[in-house]
Image (cartoon, rainbow, N blue to C red; front, side):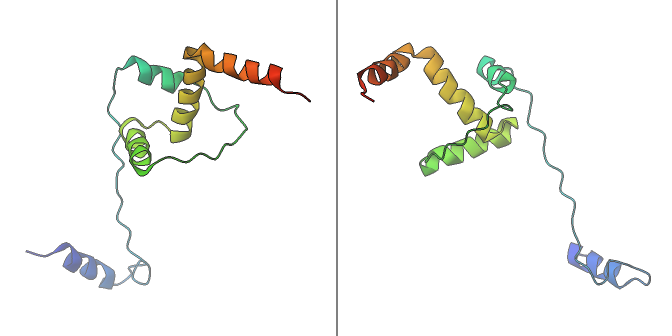
Length: 110
């Protein structure tokens, strides 16, 4: 029984092999995320952030970053889209946050 390394060595030394001097690359298939029917996931995927141009640098703790990256792998949803949707959803569902901002602007002297 030959190991994978032995098989690769034999393949490399065959005459006429153009890869003999190069690096052997192994093709790896990316697994497609499974189809998940969750209402919030549908809303996130339908959210269009392609017109957004502003960039905000934010900091997350390690566990949150790991969770967001795992979410990306599980669903195929970009982390930027997830964060953009989450912030917009936060302000849309909590109008008191906008009221706090308006009150601050009214009390600010120019």
